[in-house]
Image: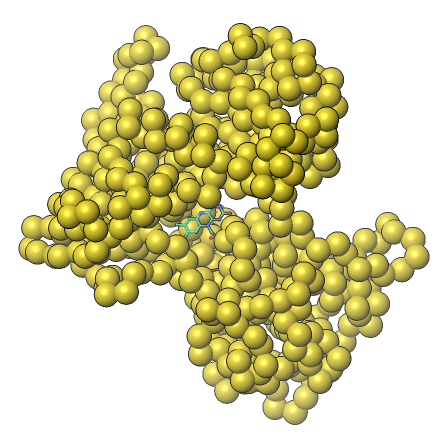
Length: 485
Ligand SMILES: Cc1cc2nc3c(=O)[nH]c(=O)nc-3n(C[C@H](O)[C@H](O)[C@H](O)COP(=O)(O)OP(=O)(O)OC[C@H]3O[C@@H](n4cnc5c(N)ncnc54)[C@H](O)[C@@H]3O)c2cc1C
């Protein structure tokens, strides 16, 4: 059973010690405490981590402000006299910060109410099962590593001054007149979208052949068309070679010799695992290019003297670097620890503790919140054809032009479904304003291996964008209604 035994001069031995208070770490702490385990949560900066303070929430607040600016500009199209007279950057930050502050306060309250021992300071794993902070040792029967990630740069490209990462972009005190965005992945295109709506000239540089290159190529191409229409420039398949700073700006040169001049260069080339100098390798934790190697149950293979495990969750574990993946992994680890401690993660289940099922990486939904939004779950058409053979895969694109709600909102785009022939839907790929809100249904469909025929018979409310999913499945099931093809 859970225990908190005090050892001389130290705070005690906890059932669980969590290193890092971001999405992965705090969800593990909250769920473990909810299940009656004693928990210490160690955080050197702010509870909530990247997602709350430097990631998901502040960027989405900026994107919402950007949407309001666009709507204000376009009011006359709807017969409403509005205009965008400019961007009050301080006001935008005040709005964004108030959203973050409200959530931060709520999260602090939750941690306190669940009686998690919250420790502020830099922790290191001094031995399996022991994390030290400012000379104080916190022993855990189990330890969860959840130290997250940092914005990477390229060799020789130093961050500073006019060369920034998303960290500085989120607190910039002005709208730049022009920006080069290095990297056409999720963070790059989201910030490109914000700045364009705020009036900046934006040029994206992507070394691969498409924007959002990990998405189905149909979405990438549609986003490229939409960005071109919005006046967002991009160069594809051309690598960055150097950036030269001057008093007036920064000049970016690509392999082809093409140059771009701008006020600022945003480096958005991905995020590296924050695992250096934490004592991990000395404690026996295996790393690969800094990422923590785990089995599918997120165990590092290192055991503690108390008979528990050292676990890892979130961005330090190879895979999608997304907050909801971290939340799910944190909950999974907490429930696994509870089960190993004789506590049933689900009190309603008869028969005592059970091992929870690992997080299914294949059905984690992905959203890129630029305008238009890009959302997907499951496999792309190309991946499905690799897995099952091109002849065994069927696809369907349902154009949002046939969707009343999308017409009202003035958005174009489509829903693309990928199914195994005579089998379940294995991928859903969406593009259009607000389609991120639809991907929850997509996850249920792909996760539960639904057939288009199953979904076709479900009634979708009219007029919603959600209805487009119903229509797409009806069409794929061979009974299209509002479809011209
Ligand atoms: C600009 C941007 C936008 C994003 N938008 C989205 C989005 O819309 N949706 C989405 O799902 N994901 C988004 N992400 C990704 C998301 O933020 C991360 O996947 C998520 O925060 C990872 O959670 P984590 O717990 O692994 O790490 P983190 O949230 O990074 O938390 C790790 C914590 O550990 C602490 N820490 C590190 N080392 C130590 C130590 N030695 N001692 C004590 N504390 C330590 C850090 O201070 C930090 O608070 C975005 C990221 C960025 C940068």
